[in-house]
Length: 100
Ligand SMILES: Cc1cc2nc3c(=O)[nH]c(=O)nc-3n(C[C@H](O)[C@H](O)[C@H](O)COP(=O)(O)O)c2cc1C
Image (cartoon, rainbow, N blue to C red; front, side, top):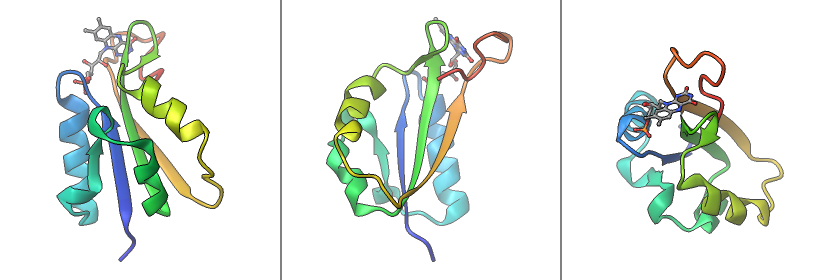
């Protein structure tokens, strides 16, 4: 079975719950699900398959905890990794729906 690392940022818990649902569906262990607020970006190096999730805040912005984590990701070599993205948002905000 493929090993996935699931990394999410969540302010009110919706993206956290979604990450857990994705993990259950894929058979990913809870230990491979990370809240980026409490995680060193280097952790992604342990996985070939990454699933990254953010809710959208402000007007199409990333969830707050992602900014520092992304700074950390940008200096890593992610070549060859398979990366999937998911997002949570409010579809009534049609201009910025899941803009993160
Ligand atoms: C102040 C505020 C701004 C928001 N801005 C957006 C937005 O621009 N686009 C969007 O799709 N959702 C927006 N949302 C909705 C959130 O992304 C949504 O509630 C999401 O489920 C929160 O997930 P989280 O609890 O994992 O952070 C906003 C919500 C609030 C309260």
